[in-house]
Length: 318
Image 1 (tube, rainbow, N blue to C red):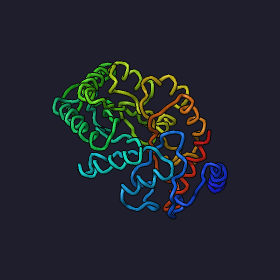
Image 2 (cartoon, rainbow, N blue to C red):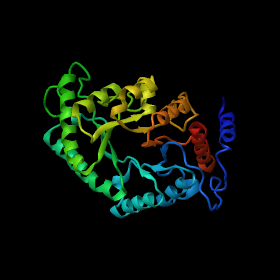
Image 3 (tube, rainbow, N blue to C red):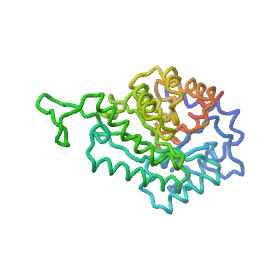
Image 4 (cartoon, rainbow, N blue to C red):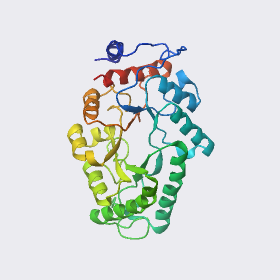
């Protein structure tokens, strides 16, 4: 199905749910559209052509379209005043705050074989994230635990900290130990760091955490309510596929989902993933959390933003 045909079919499929289209097309309307079945969470900039540059206006627009959640990876870079304003707006519109990035390292073995200074930096960022979460009403925060400590060629057998590169079992133990220390900070506040396995083939070569079974084993080893899995459907389609069975295997340790179609990392319907089936499965399992829309728009401008909304209407149908 080509892009135009997909958009046409999505529009037809969503018509029965959309009692009023006026807000979607940028006109004033006294009523919001029906809420989605799952907690899909747009992010800043996704609807700026229709809603304007203000993140507060974008949140209000998203709520009017039926979205019940919001995520903002860059929340730590915002001022405390803006974080609080976002939290208040979400509360006013009865929306869940999704993840922000508490700590993310992609090319350094910070967890697998970091030095003391690096470990203190990680713990300090987790402590700072507690205050950020309080201001914006967040419960979940993303942690990416660095890269693999690996030998890249025969001559390079020493890591950046002046020691020998470690076998995988020792790296696993180091990651678990650091995550336990992070969990000790978060547990008293009922906050949850979610670990995101990332694909190495397209976006993030060399990251330590890549597979869902690996994330599951880590969370079981850490054994804390504050350490769970962020199952990014886009990344796991690239890394391993077999999405629904892997979701079921990991279910007890999953706290958060993200999505994006593959290839391209755009809205559902632009790639190969059967998102209607995947989302039906989450709904059948009574998932009440957030599904972060961590992807781009396949088309530019207002038309592209309308296409994103229609795409979610299409895959959200029961």
